[in-house]
Amino acid sequence: MSPRPAPNPARPPTAPRAQCRPPGQRLWPSRRQRGAALLAAMLTVTLVATLAAGALWQQWRAVEVESAERTRVQSNWILTGALDWSRLILREDAIAGGPDSLSEPWSIPLQEARLSTFLAADQNNNAGDDIDALDAFLAGSITDQQGRLNVSNLVENQQLQPAAHRAFAKLFDLLSLPAAQLSTLEQNLVLAQKGSDSQALLPAQRVDQLLHYGLTASTLSQLRPFITVLPEKTPVNLNTAPVEVLYASIRSLDMASAQRLVKLRARSHFKSLSDVGQQLGELAAQVNENEHSVNSRYFEVLGRLRLGDNRLEERSLVRRNNTEVQTVWRERNPSPSLPASAQTP
Image (cartoon, rainbow, N blue to C red; front, top):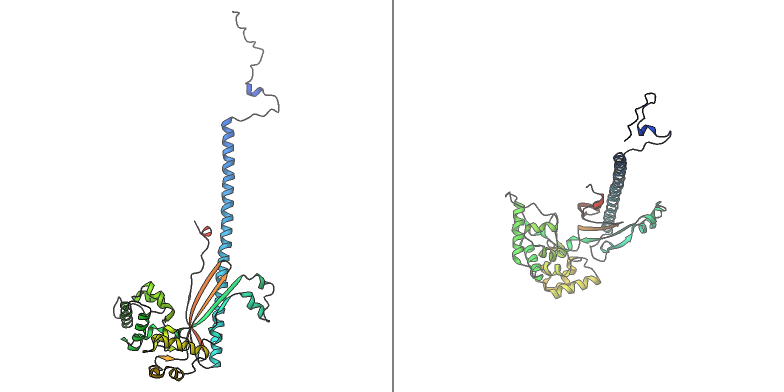
């Protein structure tokens, strides 16, 4: 081997390879540095997208909440207006005078109709183009509550009333309902009036509350069209009572005679209790002012509203004293909640 030449002291040492790149040539980072930069960029994009999506969801939810609140307020005003309209109809009927029967305007139910129909009929309405855009449908009815057996008649001054008991017993027998439930109902009504026991029930104000008084759901569903719960003792209006209530409210009346009375009043309603007595003959003495009448003071107003995708139903009990019509209570189905997607996770 030839010997390695000695370094020339006059020649400068060779620079590192990295420093000997041509001028203007870029120094590329290592592969690890490039991966870290890409990951940081992806995390930044993900963070920005998440924040933007969260802000968009919050804005959308605020719009949904505001829309639901606006719908609730609009529904409340519409149903309140429908109730006031019903009270006006009952007031005008009182001004006209005469007995209350199923041939009067208040007894005709309102079929579902677009609300803009009523607005367009008002010449003084300045809703303008908003009428066609109002997607609301209203339906309702007025029902005479004195055309039913009043549960409040069963007990007075903490004592069971024989006449009311006979009427309810006839109705239970007609509908093939267990008499034991009637006894339990009467006992609980007495206890509710006494109110001395800490376990005593509160006085019932709605028919549905009779479930706590000993009636089963099936029994109550059969009784519902024929009974009511009113704040005071009331007679049965023989002009508006269905055939089952007529049969139950007159002590010795049979079903055939009750059906005959319904047909007679359909042609011409009873103007007084004496008109009913003339049709009953020997049973005329069983019709009296304490248990029967041809006028009514209590009515139930039912309003149904369909506003967009929301459906609401409101029931109100009103009391009419001469020309004054007062609301006793109002009961409305729960307002529609927000969609599940709009609720806070």
